[in-house]
Image (cartoon, rainbow over all chains, first blue to last red; front, side):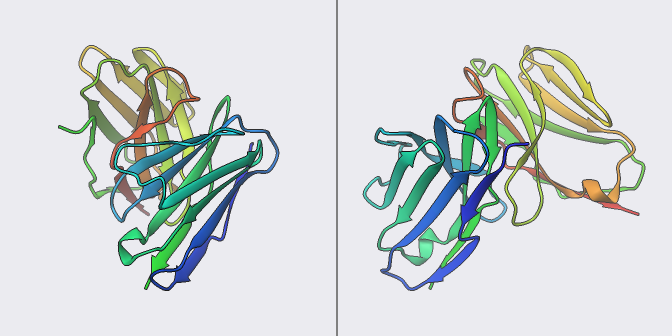
Length: 112
Length: 112
């Protein structure tokens, strides 16, 4: 089956720093990638939709200047959490679409 | 009222039991319905995908959709300890290439 990877799998950072999370489709080209956030015991909440070569579409309430998304190629999308704060601590999951959505393993971000 | 409601459980059953997991939704525009399984600290993996009312069977899993009642179910027959995970229902308006709206997930534990 199609594989989506995320890097890093977990990261701890200090408040005020920026963190970049990579999402790669390893064996297929994805026209669209999605970024979700999941808090403990909560559902996956869509943050943004990313299409290669164009600006990401953010969901209401998601700050586009804080969560920078770059979709440089059909196999790579990155999410940068800028000036991270403890409330940004969460599980970030990407998915890549090719006939269906394939999810990455997630990145656990802890901001101290 | 949230768009997708799902009882978070936890649900504990003995090995071999039949498990019933359910979601209700409020928006009749949802057309595509999915069930995902998520192990702890991992990304979701697709179990079942349906787009019409009725039943769809795949091995020990049966997905049921009742659009008139806005109600979907996942049945697991002969449950195994390896089925212990969180099960998320998800739905979308147009096709699998659009963003998914998830339920909160039901945590299932199958004891041997």
